Length: 596
Image (cartoon, rainbow, N blue to C red; front, side, top):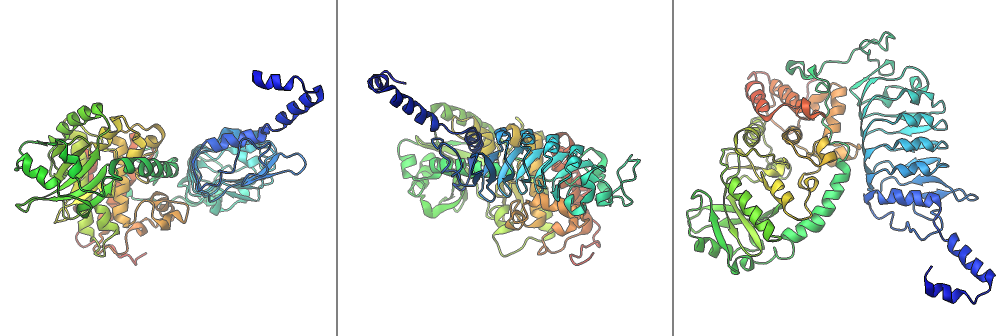
């Protein structure tokens, strides 16, 4: 209390002073409200539903999605489904001791299910389905003896189903389907009452509920063994490689929103925002210089700068994660692609130039060639080869002409060789960090070229708001990359595996048809494999599909997206398999999309 306030209050009668103190104490937020504020602080984005949660309120009973007991003012319901909530679930939720309903389904929560939920012993319904939660199912949920409804399906949960859940005698609904659970389903207790629909989509599970015999299970859990999948490539030799774990990982949903908010809100505005609608003349008018790599630009600096001054929004051919791209046509008919990246400071300037020298020295048939750059006071203008075929993303998803089977295989092969060169053969070796269909460009013959290699690392090290996570793209990122932000060759390989599935399916990893089911392309394929229908992932518009090369390609993809980095092959090994088993199928063995 300030000295001024004390002086003002001294003349007042004692009872007024006491009343003042009591009134201020009454305005303090209740413990349940404090727990919910902690929950709110763990949310990084939403559709605005939490804006009315005010810390100055005496209790949270009037907050959106919150219901309190009328007498005790204790929170009994927290009901916030379908609000695009992105973030982790705060452990402080466990402080809501009288909570009866927790409904957070169909949001974008990531991280683990907090074990502190076991403290909410009055909980009767727990709905967490349709998020991106990972890790183990907490055994502490077995303490929720009043629980009647438990749905944690369509997440990325792993490990075993805790035997403690068998003690929940009041359960009437139970659903852990479409996760990555393994091991025997508990055969004691209430879980024996639920059918296979409660467990479908977990290829590592076994037990009598799903009629799959557990190995080394003397109890005889079932009579039917799981059908073999893609035996020809021995995908099941390692711990996880027999499972189709092509998941976008626990944190994918959240990072979609984080990346979109940070990336589009900050990065694009700064990198290619308010000035990109105008001519680039301002960029080069203040004293620009041209740096050429190995004579790759047979023009004078004056000629190049003169052309740059004529570029405006009419010449824009793309806008992506690293800047706006322009089409630069020289007088002799040669065409180049110009990528504009705004500079931040002088430290960035020196670092950028050093790194660009390295990138400019890397030449390979399946990489987009960096020919040079224009160094202006306000930006770097990178000059690349122009690829007339556009991006693979455009070819797959935006054009009426469909890529046939041979074209898709050749594109995958070219992208694999380009990435293998970055990983194994160029010096220094480069981790791409953002492998996706929009970063695979096509020439006039639909030959693939890997683009934007090295830029994610370069811009991350620059002192800006760009992070390792923002550098990646939702749907393609490996689980460990999402959790740690540390990119490795194996995180690139995971992204390449998702890219292969995208080419096969003709659908983006986050296609609306998957999202409607609470899945992505990974979860959908996982489900198809449990049904022994994995070939249905193939784009029905693709002509000339061959079953042998299809199965081999699926096998490679499965290995690439193994959840454990140690289970993924190297890119050299991927290229070897593609050349020996995918590119040389039996000519007469064509796949009929209408066959069983």
